Image 1 (cartoon, helix red, strand yellow):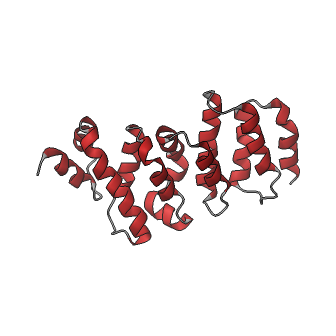
Image 2 (tube, one colour; image 1 turned 60 degrees about the horizontal axis):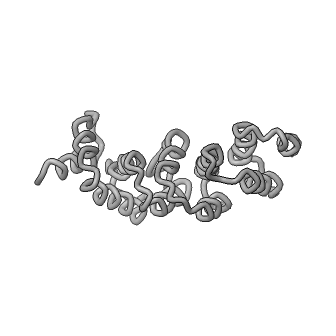
Image 3 (cartoon, one colour; image 1 turned 90 degrees about the horizontal axis):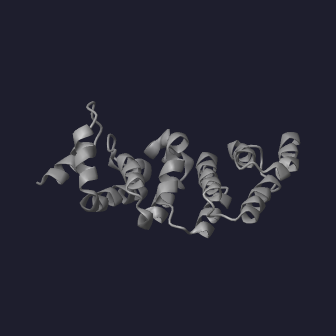
Length: 193
């Protein structure tokens, strides 16, 4: 077994020791590591909450694929994070609220319609949808997303009749973060809902 395979094996299951050396080996062998990392994500998608206890390679794989900016695997990452809420919580826990937007942004493949469709899906966890909305906000701030298109997308959600939720608050946050002063009526509308 070569050094990379040993490193992958060592981070596959929970351990008390932080795998600093293993991460170094994996990041130095990016191209050879990617198939192992993708396979771990696919395993998590397939096995869901029946994934064996202690297995965590899929968790590290999310962050590593984000670091490697693996845009080819974007749709699979979205498939993982749009599993039912209890399954996503079991598989990646607090990553939903702490690092997910960065992972998605780093792996975003340019398919804005796919991203929009996923955000519109009310079956997807509201925190995941909020993270994806944050990615769209960053795309706007980067000059990739047109202002009118972005404002119209936010307005659709503000006036959708969707129940007050974290996602609804995320829409208000995007209006403020993007400095859309002309959308103050939408903020007022959300306050009285």
